[in-house]
Image (cartoon, rainbow, N blue to C red; front, side, top):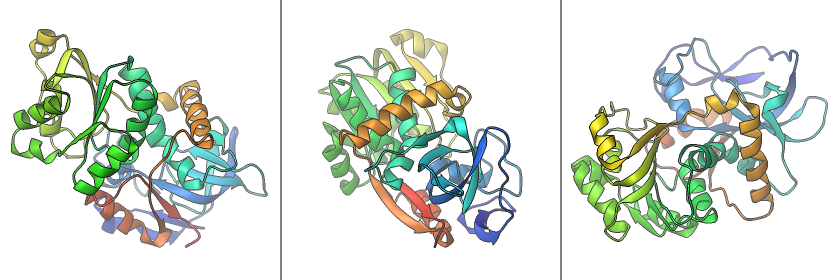
Amino acid sequence: MRAVQITEFGGPEVLTVVDVPEPEAGPGTTLHDVSAAGVNYADTHQIENSYLAEQRLPLVPGAEFVGTPVGGGQRVVGLLDGGGYAEKVAAHDALTWPVPDGVSDEQALSLVLQGSTAWHLLRTSAHLAEGETVVVIAGAGGVGSLAVQLARRWGAGRVIATASSPEKRKLAEELGAHATVDPALADEDPKRFTGALREANGGKPVDIVLEMTGGNVFSGSLSALAPFGRLVTYGMAARQQTPSVPPGMLMQKSRAVIGFWLAHCMARPQMMDAAMTDLLQQVADGQLHPVIGGRYPLSGVADAHQDLLARRTTGKLVLDPAR
C-alpha cells in the first residue's frame, strides 16, 4: 500500500510516499480503508524528533483517520499511535467513533486531536466558569478555532483570540471572538503583549489563556492573568525554550500554569469518549462549525507541512490517500 514514510529526521523534505506492507489487525483492532488522514502541527515536531515522545525510524506519521472497515461497514473516525498517512490503518476499536451522517470526513478529523484538545483544555484543565474571560492563542488554527466556539457556547464572558494576519483575526471574530490581538507584539516585548491582552479585556487582567506557542507569548500571557487565573500550555510552536516560572510569581497572584497533552486522555478512553461524543453531536446538530483549511493529495504531504510551518493555513488540513 502507499504510505508516507520517513527514514531520517528533518523538515518537510524528509516526507516521501513509498510502498509499504499493509498493517495487520491484532486483538481489539480493526483494519480500515482510509478515506482521509488528518494533519496536525504536532506532526511537524514528530518528523523532527522534537516533540514530547522520542520517535524511532523508519516511521509513518499521522495520528488520525476517517475510514471504513476493510470489507465494508460503518464509517468511523479514529485515533492512532502513528501510521495515519497511509491507504490502510489498523486502529484500536476503543479509539474509533461512528461518524454521523451529514458530518464530513474533514469535519470529523478536526475533532479527534484538535477538537478533543480544545474540549479538554476548557473543561478538564482550565475548568472554565461562566462569565470568565478566555484568551485563545492562535484562534484561527485547528484547536483555536474550535476553542473560540466552545468557550462562547459554554458561557465565557469574553473571548479574546490572537491571530497573525488581518484575515485570520477576522475569521476568529466571525467564529465568536469578541476581540483579537496580533501575537507579533510578543516578539517585540512580552510586556506589550500583556498590555494588548488586558486592553482587549477592557483594561482588566484575564482569567484563562490557552497557550501553544511558548517563548515570549507564554511570558506575556502569564503576566496578563488575574488572581486565580489559569494558563494552560499545550504546545511549543515557537520552538523556543519557555522561561522558567518562579514559584513566587505564581503565589503573588494565585496564578496557575497547567500543562496538557492529549496522550494522557488516550490512556483513559472514557475521557476521549466524553469529548468525541459531545463534539460529533454538536457538529451534526449544526452548533459547532469546524474550519476546514485544505485537502492535499498524499503526494503533496510536504506542501501541507510547509504551509503549516509558514502559518499560511487556518483550521483543519487533511490528506487524501487516493491521490
